[in-house]
Image 1 (cartoon, one colour):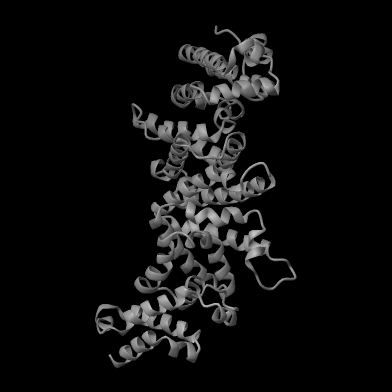
Image 2: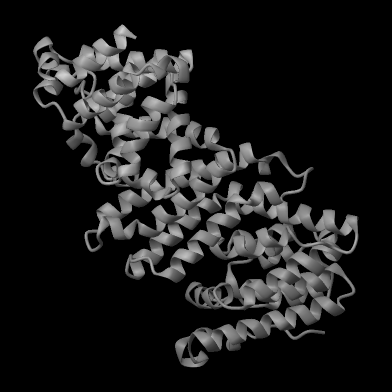
Length: 485
C-alpha cells in the first residue's frame, strides 16, 4: 500500500527553512506525483486511485476529505480522513511549486490518460469534482490550457478510447474556460505578473502570451465533430471575447488606481493577450461574433463617460474614465492590419443595423481608433483610401467615415469644423474628385461604387462654403471636367 503523506514532512518542505527553496519544493512535488503514478499503475479499485490522487490534492487546495471518504469503503475511508490538511500559506507554497514546475504537466498526463480511460467512470461524481476536477479548475488557467488543448490532438489505441479521452478533455475545457471564467482569470494572472515584475514585455513573455492565445483560439478546431455545442466557434468565441473585454476593462481600472505603475506598462501583457486572441478569432472567420460582443460594451462605456445632465460628449469626458485606457489601445493591440480592417468593416455594418445616431458612432470610432490613426499611416489609409475609394458601405456608414476621418469633427459641430478645417479634408476631396473626373471612372467602376464615390464628394461639398470652393480651383476644375464626361 502506498505511503500516506506525512503532515510534518509537508509542513517542513513547504517552509523556507525546511525545503531549500523553490527547486527543492518542485522536486518534492515531483516525488509526490511519482508516488501517485506508481499507486495508480498498480491499483485494483477506483478507491485506490482516489487515495493516490487525494494525497497530492490535499497539498494544493482545500479538499473536503470527509465527503470524499464517505463514498469509499474501509480501510481507504479511514486513510483518507486521517490525512491532515495544510495551512493556506503551506498550500500556496506547494501550489506554486506544483503548477509552475514539472509536476503538473506530469500529473495531468496521468489524470487525462490512465485515470480518465480506466477509472473515471467508476469514481463518484462528488469525488470527481472535489479531487479530480480540482487539479484543473483550481489550477492557474495559463498552465491548465497548456495541458488540455494539445492533448486533444493525441490519438488513443481505439476509437472508443479516443472518444472517452476527448470527451473528458472537452468537459474540462468547458468547466475551466467557460463555466469557471478561466479566460478572465488569465487576464488577471497577467495583471498580477505586471504588478510584481516590470511591465516591459521581454521576448520570452511575448512568445508565451502568443502561445496561449494560439491554444485558446484553436479549441473549436481541435474539438471533435460531435463535441458539446459550447465548443463550437460561435458559442466558444462569444464567451471568450466577452470574458476578455470585461476583465480587460477591470484591469484598466486596477492599473489606474495603482499610482506606482505606468498605466501603459501595467496593461502591456493584458493588451498583448487580448490583441492576439481577437486577431486569431477574426482570422478564423468569427469577426461578426467579436464585433457583436464589442459594440454593446463600447456603447456602455461611452454612456459611463457622460454625466446624466450632459447631452454631448467631449474628448476629456472619455479620457478621464479609467476604462478608456483599454479602449484607446485595443484596436492597435490587434497588430494584424488585415484583422483590423475586417473588424472595422464588420463594425461599421453592424452599427448601421443598430440604427444609431451619427454622433454616438463618431465617438465610438474616436474612442477605438483615434490613438492609432494619429501616428499609424496605414490606419489612416484604411479609412481614407480603402473605405472611400475601394469599398462600398451603406450611406450612413459613409457619413460616419467622413465625419471621423475626413472632417475630424462630430456631426453636430459643422460650424466649428469649417472654422478649423483639417488639412486632410482638401487632400481627400481632391483625391475623390480626381478619380471621379476621369473618363475611365464610368468604365472601370461598378454603378454601386460610382454612386458611393459621388455621394462622398457631395457630402464633402455640402460642408464647404461657396467662397471656400472658389478658392480651391483644382477641386472645382475636376468637378467641371467630370460633369463634361
